[in-house]
Length: 158
Image (cartoon, rainbow, N blue to C red; front, side):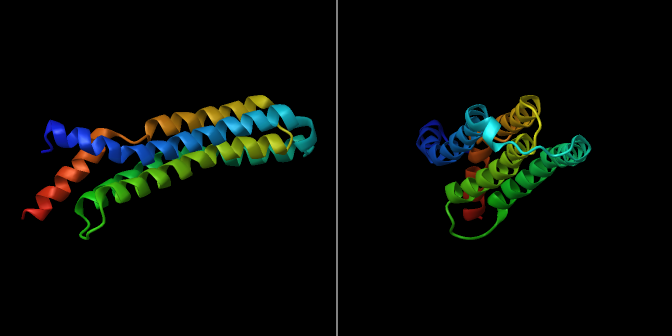
């Protein structure tokens, strides 16, 4: 178990994962800003029935992405704890955060793509909101990181 001093020291290990989250969130904001500023020039007018089909498919993919991201994250965290090797825990956990954020960011990209295909701002906001929710759910968690360190330290001493 990490003591209080070690936990404070290892908090600095989470700066880079949080930087990734902030960058991904800034990209979501950028999609909205770009659509508001250049919306008329960027939009293509795809027929309504084709847009509805694409939107439905993207909603289904977004719905599947959340539990899939949770599963992949769970597997990665467990591998971070149990996989042998000299890789530092922080680089392993950083990869876990990058994969989670990339999967969730794709949901925000769906909204941007639908806007480009002629949908209104409502669709953009829904997908972007779902992506922001996913970023909150799969953010770097100190307790999760400490568990990885604890488990790896316990395995070293065996």
